[in-house]
Image 1 (cartoon, rainbow, N blue to C red):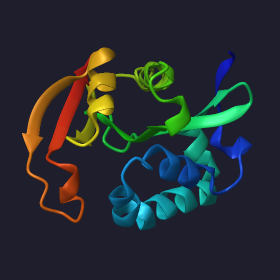
Image 2 (tube, rainbow, N blue to C red):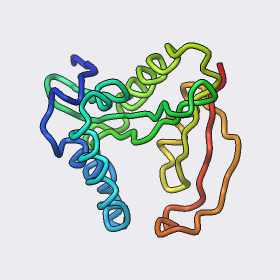
Image 3 (cartoon, rainbow, N blue to C red):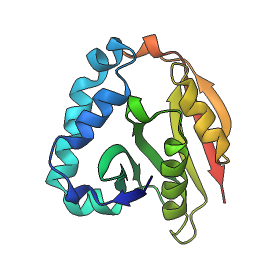
Image 4 (cartoon, rainbow, N blue to C red):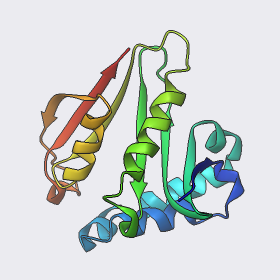
Length: 162
């Protein structure tokens, strides 16, 4: 099995959205709640391909897109925040999410003087929590989720310091 990390610009508009829909297909409430945000995310990156290629990538297995990850560098050197990070349902549980996250962390640490990487997930996403912890992120706080996505449980904030 050949895994690679490719530029977002190598793919057609809609791939980020479709991977998010697939990755969260285990609970229809996810799509009902976040569908609009996922479409806006996909549109933003495909309207700003230079940003997309610099701050994210698509994970490809044997030529097929199976996931993606992106990050927001606007608060560096204090921190960089990981944004969307997903693996398609068919490929979950095989270590691809850890490889994707590890590659993103490697790329992010290349920023000079960066103090930490942060990410927020929620209680619904138990595999995500395990994934972040497996590469060295530490839980720093849990916050109540009062928004439209409250069904997904409390927010869980993680960080990794240099």
